[in-house]
Length: 181
Image 1 (cartoon, rainbow, N blue to C red):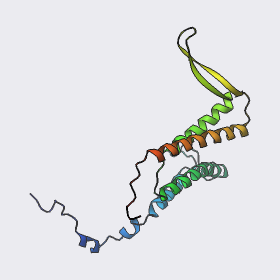
Image 2: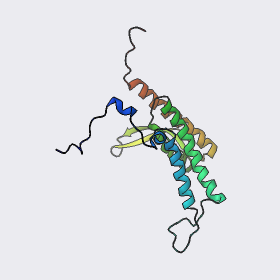
Image 3: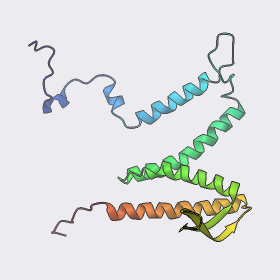
Image 4: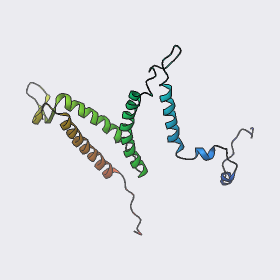
């Protein structure tokens, strides 16, 4: 066996060994987000190149004009709000995967309420004419304004979020506290 190709196990004294010139830079946690920001600016710059004869840019150089910047900031603002909330959860030591599903649920809920209205229906099984489900409507709103749709969506997402949080809190195994407390 060739000993030059096998790796020897790391020792505690390896921390004191000679470091590469870039290891102090790459060990910083800020470098990842900074690199992503530089990558985004480079991509925005590339897509801002005007369309030419040999250009592979499909966007005709509309990235760095006022309309392109406005469109990018709209998306960044929406994702930034969600990222701040998720970041606070991660800093607190928690991790919540329901954020993405709740965003999708809220968008779908809002679209359906605006298109078809809102009704509270209690489903039940009926055997008249064969086995099928029917619904008892408690109340219905046919033409829903956008503001009312936002309020209904907010109430639904808050209630589902509360239910998810309650299930998580009640189902997680909490270690017992030390007897010294």
